[in-house]
Length: 507
Image (cartoon, rainbow, N blue to C red; front, side, top):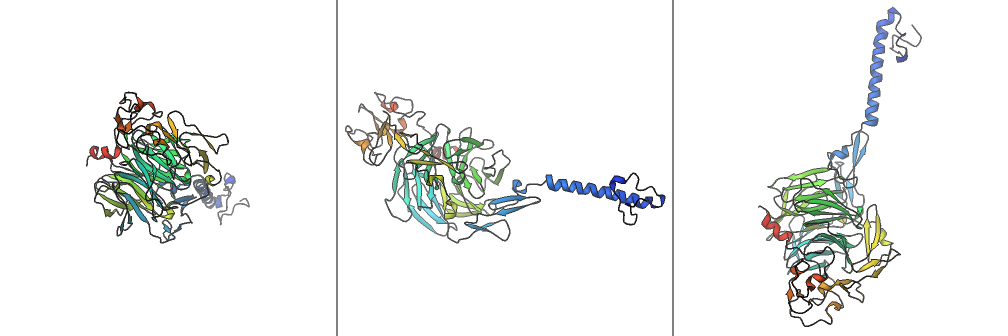
């Protein structure tokens, strides 16, 4: 027997199997050794291939149940938390806030705005006397609430500490039809949905421009993710969709177009990079996890699908490990686990229909270094994908060649307010009885008013036109002035989503 074959220890080499067992006395023993060696070698090779090339990414399956981020490792995974505000709990999945500061839930109630503790045990009225306020957002850094009152055709803000003008009016024109607002707490801008457009303005309302024109049909909700330079919007027309858009106006992409009918509510989980939405027609709350790598439907998951639990969600927000929403059927505010939909709880009942809601806490609007701090933009600084940013200009201005400053471009269809307020006002709002310029330039040298405030007075002073009659392709004025100064693509709409939804929804 060759020296490299030891029958007692079965030490056989695979390469020599054709000669290693020639001696009859050792044949049986050595034959078994060769067989075992071949099997063992094959098993090791297969195991090596499995470990090296066939690792299962548990994080992509949504099964790990991480509160925030899931990091895949060969053969396992790891849940991680943002260390600024959170730490990983002993279950190695849940992210627990480091501080114990209370969170507050602000919600719009039509004619008022309230805040409530997350337990539902404490209420406080923030603002009464409103006409029709359905959408709001918060700015934690400056402790303010932003809201649109479409009844008074205004966008306003409140200081939570009670200082300053109470409230402060930011916009008094082109507010009718606003369906959603979202605060960019990094770039210091306010995004809004109005009719077919997405608009952006500085938080003080001084500069405002159309960011995306004609991309919507029946807009409903908007949510911001400044860390990614993205906003998300929803449309509940006959071809309903949810879209992602760059905050600098560079891209607009429909990401959810199937199995969606009335996507009333949107909410971004900024730590998990997930977007939640509620469909008030299909009675579901869903989420999409693939916001960074691209949406292909594989990251879509249903959280709640029960007409008895979510019969008519209007607004949605996320904080820590919970979802909070307002529901018209329950006339209340509810919450549930954000990953499983379990533990549905009624936080509070409301006397009237509850509308928009937001949770107020520093951890929900974390600060981070931004190019807007160094670009030196004269008017608007717009965040973009991949932590980029660029300067922009308000309506009636164009960007200078230096990429930072803005030069006036007010045409014959606009009037420049002048003074410290560098903005252009459409001639549609000149001499309408309401000052849209701080220096009242739009109401100077006007003929005697024969119309009510807010109505359009035809330039021949012979007729009054309601706001809904402007730019509707019908010449109500004898001199056609109600159709003369319309911006490109601007047309009034006779349908209000908030009003028509109640009559259209089958409760």
